[in-house]
Amino acid sequence: MSSVAQKTMILGFNTTSIDWIPLAPGAWYKPVRFSADGEGWVSLVKLAPGATVPRHHHVGAVQGFNLQGRGRFIEQDVVTTPGTYTFEPAGTIDTLVAEGDEELIILFTVDGPVEFLAADGAVARRETQATKISNYEQNVPGARELDVVRI
Image (cartoon, rainbow, N blue to C red; front, side, top):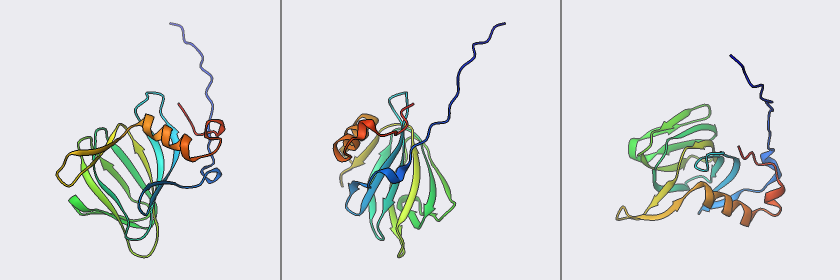
């Protein structure tokens, strides 16, 4: 039996090196990682008090870790506070709202596209890793030279 030695390395990206990028009214994000599979990403999401991430459908699973503030996933009445981990299986439809007086900041790991829904349930906008990267590169000067992790 032979083994191939692989070089491992820790990669880092200082999220304070970029400004928050608009996501929706009162909502912003910062990319942290774009996965090598071309499907997923990790990002910080910030909501102003009372702001929402509009109703959306998760094609892939999503994991969240609340860093600051209080939020509520309206459809299932799940509350998230600092230190709360959430798991949204593929197929989940939800709306996230920031409650209280403090900004809500959650670190999300997204395993596939997110489809934002119109009032009638039709897909109004589809967010993929490619659209996330494009939006990032359009909104952040020198984005291609920054060290957002891309593996």
